[in-house]
Image 1 (cartoon, rainbow, N blue to C red):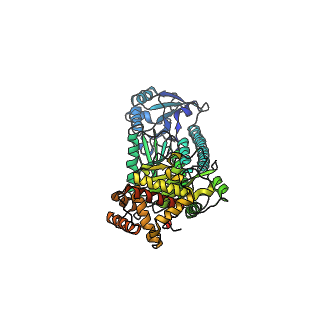
Image 2 (image 1 turned 180 degrees about the vertical axis):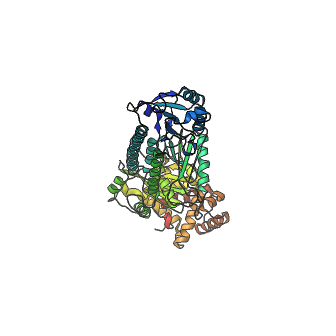
Image 3 (image 1 turned 60 degrees about the vertical axis):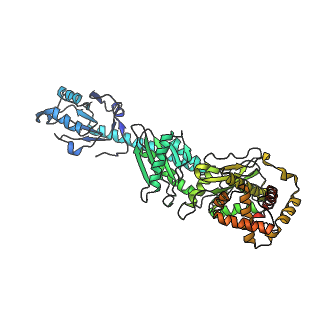
Length: 521
């Protein structure tokens, strides 16, 4: 039986051991690994041997068996023995030529075990080499675990962890989101056909109620290994870790991958983010974007490992259906934290708000994979922490433009400043309240619905169809609301000048934070 079928010893290691004095006298000269060392004097040992063994014998009684050495060699070669060690004396004074010829015919490696080298010494040398290799593997795994833990505890932990796993294995590593998009990659990105193959395998895991892993070989030089990140997510909401490598993963690499999987599970868990619950982080984001708060700036900045003195607000809306079980919220949060590079994120009902620390002159880059992830995102300009409500209003305006124009990312630029910036803020707000006075007199919830519908309709250049799609209501509902607005304001919504006036009024109300509550003074 093998001592440890997970660890093999190259035959060359035993041949190079000076204390054994082994010599190969027949068979192929190419490299082969030994999985175990066994000793037998049976004429037919095949029921008791396994592939990859070094089989030791002194040839007792073999010359007298029918067929002699030829039949014996054929039996053990067919059984998959890696090499045959022949001990000279006391039975034979040297390795019989008949045995050498038989081993050459059947391409079986034959070793001359010299007088003075007991078989137990060969077995002991093999065992000691296995132990040394185990120790080196365990040390490597310990170093890998430390490196993975360090990556998980640093900035951008999910991407860092995936990259570190690629460095600690012979594989390219890709973390796939529930739709099969590459959320993070370690090593060279696989070619498009391989990426499609990974997506296909990941899809099979997404829709399987029981399977949590799959592996396969594509030809001789590509091995695929995919595993579900163990977060307890429902079917269809799983992150999948995919590894591609030229060879099958070793036991050590599989154990390292298992460690990475559990670290990823911890990072995706709802409790991850500055050792606080996700709900707490979301509440903090809502607080900061609605009130003037500056005493938490240093705490937040240290938590995000950021430099600079400004913050960008990102607002987003998901294009994914909101049906029950469609997404695991923790997976979505981990995905968007990784894409945006910040832990400060509030996500609920397909709506997203995130804070990204940055330098005023170096705002964050927009992600390239937003469309594949199913989000429309809008970025404000960099603001100080006490100006976050203004930044939020700016990001909201950009999001409405993104949705109306069917763009996936909109970023506020200085060049976006328009004619309305020439109007004093107080005068603009007073004008807006005057224009929209009749709507203000309605109950707050009704006013909010009408003003939001009007603003979206104007942003869509008067398209009822696109407005109904964005708001998620029937187009007749949109028409009915617009009729109400037209009647209340006494305005012709088909008149270009009226539309322009209402657009400015709604924008100014929104800048003051009033659009969400019906624009009330």
